[in-house]
Amino acid sequence: MLTPSMIFHNGCVHTVDLHDTIVEALAISNNRIIATGTNEAITAMAADDTQRIDLGGRSLIPGILDTHAHAVEVGLFLKSLFCNGIPSIKDLVDAVAEKIAVLPKGAWLQGGCWIETQFSENRMPTRWDLDPVSPDHPVVIERIFSTCVANSCALHMAGITRNTPDPVGGTIERDSKTGEPTGILHRSAKALVRNIMSTGTDTGSLAGSSVAEIRALAQTAMQAFVAYGITGTLEAGVGPDMCRAYHDMHRSGDLLVRTSLMPNWYGFTITQNMAQMDRLIGEMGFYTGFGDEWLRLSGLKMAIDGGLTSKTALKSWPYLGGDPPGPVPLRLDLEKLDSWVKSAHDAGWSVGIHVMGDIAIEKAVNAMYQAHVANPANRRHQVIHAYYPSADSLAKMKQAKLVAAVQPAFIYGEADGYPNLLPEDKQECFLPLRTYLDAGVIVASSSDTPSAHFNPFWGMYAAVTRKGMQGHQLGTREAITAIEMLRTMTINGAYMTEDDHFKGSLEPGKAADLVMLDRNLNETPDESLKDITVEKTMIDGKFVYEKIGST
Ligand SMILES: [Zn+2]
Image (cartoon, rainbow, N blue to C red; front, side):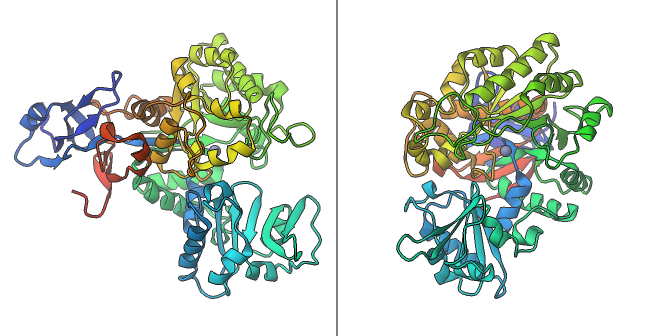
């Protein structure tokens, strides 16, 4: 029998095996888990030179898998200003001041991912909020969708005054009394400031950035991820430059977090050459699962509709206050969806399809289900976002083992805005985790960061309490338990990315990817789940994060 190089004992070890077994202790040998069991059994295995870590009653969980994320974009915002999760305009202004303190005079500060319903003030920030801390720096901060706020310095540089007319397809928001621009720019009006900024990662845009810059951004994000216990991620939507950046990182041994790549496919036509993509899946011989334990190919990413809060979801029921005029803009040709999915499925690829509305889900599920029935190969297709499944979709998802790739983090980040957007019954059944689990559908949770914050314990809190950041609750009917949620954040994500043979649970033979929490998860009240922090994160047997002062 192997002698452990390290043991963890005296804790609450959530193995997340088939039966959610909890044990007291775990042993690893270098980069692999070799045993789990009682304190007595595991400590008896230890030799003189075995390192011992006393968990002190705290939880040890499998490494968290954020299986739908945009790490490179997160890196971009972390480098500038990442606003998701900032609870008030006052805190936002403080964060701006902190960033500006280290910028040379006149340099741009760019940031993003705020949404007014996360702020306790429950309004959009204006130039007048930002100006006191930014008299000499142009500041532009993007909202999550199609709106930004600029400070007076940026408006001045862009030549925007009370006399500037609204551009076609956009609005310069103005103070109702004075007519002065408030700094809020909607849709095409954003270009008025965008156009005077140069491109490149220094100004918060990925357009025109080099492979080396992309690589640096991914590394920035990964450093942040490991502090939250994230040991594996899926980069949802990559083109050639991102693939190259990740490959470079892997080759030089700098890939901090295990990564699956999801190439952009139909629905992302802006950046992709479709003829090339067809060739890639049909002729080159690569398909889902290609790679090693650090860098692997996942499914092809497709998209049918837009966003729920941007009112571009393909659905059968109306928003509160009505829908925008005209049909929902679709991101691919629905007539061809079935044949595209089948061609990918038959070539060995799984696909992941972004679907927001109930009609979009049904189309995606049907295409995947038909491909499965015609060829019952082991594909792990992803129904991404999947807010409103029908009974028929649930049954097909179960039968074809389709994964609901969902983001409870959106409940935390956006639910406070739903009373103005969704009828009450549609709030209650939004992202129906209870229904999915009861129907036997495999659920993999992720953050879709930067659209939500990547703190996985905020997602866990939201799955259990159904509450947003400012406390609005979407009923309790669809709530699940923290232990159920943990499965969706670990082993189920590994299943989805075809990694469950070596990660996702704490079982002998699997990789030593594990996370020590600051408390015992089983004894944590629901309201405190959002406050859980990580003491240590281990990937492949090495500590990649240790909280200062952690024992
Ligand atoms: Zn996404």
